[in-house]
Image (tube, rainbow, N blue to C red):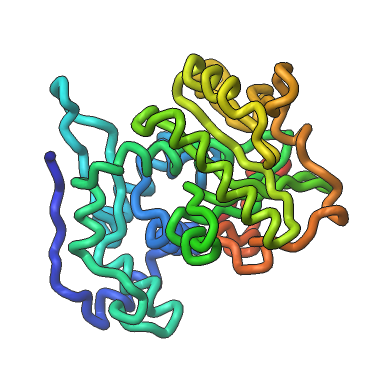
Length: 306
């Protein structure tokens, strides 16, 4: 793994004062997102914060790297060459988030060694897949917007008695919304184990009375087809899709429930907001709609924050 290291000592008052004048509201939002979601590639950041403009995202990320709030890592590919840049929160970046919340780094729960260990984890590929799914969903579209995104860790704290989804999200339009759980499948588990996950969601529905759809996103169309045959009798609302590079945006017409084979838009499964019972969304969202000021290039459905 090749990496560009930065100073590891704790930032002093002078550095934090400097950062307060150099970091935009969008920069600070990105630092908070990295605290919660651990690692993004440049493409993820472009989709999340720059309306899909990779050149603009790359330029700003390099500025944040020079300001020492982000660490840049380029892992080596197994077959040779380097992977895309991966971005992680650095000590100074964590100090910025802690200062915003009136906390110390210890109280914030951030440790540099844990952050670095993400890049060596056997689960890195899965984490990047999950983050990539939500980042693509956050990219501008006229069909709706990603209004909420919880990572696995926050989901585990909330629903650990029943399930541990890879993420929770809310897809919203002007008058409809779809709350959902995500199970991102990259083919590393047996199919029987994947199917068995629906049992926990069934228990959650019975305990809460909230029937939140479960999205299974596969990286193989063949595996999705096998799952659908094996899971046809699931007692929970299940939607399935598989990765489509030509479509890219996961809100597109790639989703099918277990009882119909036709593919529909994600918004087609949304219901009028007043028909939704309060669920996870009662807590504060990591995609705070008021976190940035409106930018002149704001696109319909997705606020382009600055």
